[in-house]
Length: 81
Image (cartoon, rainbow, N blue to C red; front, side, top):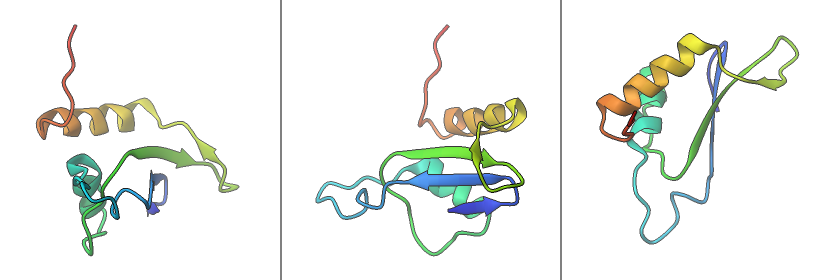
């Protein structure tokens, strides 16, 4: 799913049909920030960028940091040092 001109979210479409499906709070929150408000997302999500040719590439550090900060704030991720 393309969230913006430079951010994609890959999510397993089988996550929502499992009997014990749990909403991926981080993925759903990020998607909603970008306007995808029609459904909650379940399962594992992978965030990536894409280049001018549409090829999937790694995220820039600032975007990684922002996504990780959001995951920590929602309690979906715990970082230990």
